[in-house]
Amino acid sequence: MSNFKVVTITLNPALDLTGHLVDQLNVGSVSLVSKSTLHPAGKGVNVAKVLCDLGAQVTVTGFLGSDNQAPFCQLFEQIKATDRFVRVAGATRINVKLVDSASDVSDINFPGVEVNQAAIEAFEHTLEELSEDHDYFVMAGSLPRGVSPELSAKWINLLHKKGKKVIFDSSREALKAGLDSRPWLIKPNDEELSELLNQELTTTEACQQAALTLESKGIENIVISMGAKGVMWLNQGQWRQAQPPRMQVISTVGAGDTLVAGLTWGHLNQWAQDDILSFSTALSALAVTQIGVGVPDLASVTRLQQQININTL
Image 1 (tube, rainbow, N blue to C red):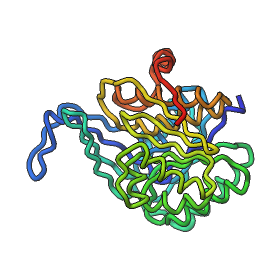
Image 2 (cartoon, rainbow, N blue to C red):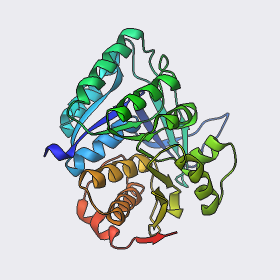
Image 3 (tube, rainbow, N blue to C red):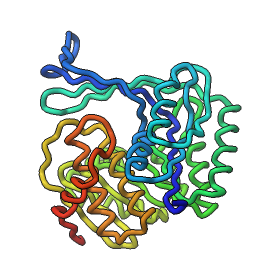
């Protein structure tokens, strides 16, 4: 069992308030919601939930507001994750996701809690302890106030120097700073990659060219998710591409986090690269057909995996 141990780091978790709109978002006037859910989230928390469903032994850490921690504590207990979050004063933010009738999602992301020096030191101590008996660390999501991109990059570098495999999934300034800290795997989507390089990447070829500039930074695995166009993975100069069949999209919320969890699970199991890619692509493709993050049925993942073609580019 110890082979399946993994730490997920969510520096800026959130309670996700997801509303399904009757029609579309009416900016500047009233929009009606037909149904809604409020649940603990944040990219690393989503990854932890999927990994626990798959059978990994997950320890969760990061910063959590003490005022509204109850839903998180309940979730961690329910999924049997070990809770090593550092509590900070205040309430964890609530992010609003509005899903319209065409399944397009409008995200309204609030800033996180304020993290002080004492909390940073407590987190660094936790990271130090966890690095003694864990090899895989997933750092995913945005940064709260008080944690600079340089500081999060320092933590990636610290783990890298200890020989740990850091799977890093972030965006904007945090992603930019973290790339120079030698994460072992990154998973930008085509939009995040475009933003990172300040150029619009609309084709597979353009995304490939962009990834090659990142490979020179010593990042071993570059995975690019491109929605319905599938997933590309660059490793040791070799490109693989997975194309899922067309899915009935209900919500894309958490699909990228599910992909990260699948990639991590495949590596924990030491599967062949084609199997890792087809499994994680199938897992992520199924995630868009459901509301909420998780793996309700592993058999359907395996069935879909058989339909996924892997090409070398």
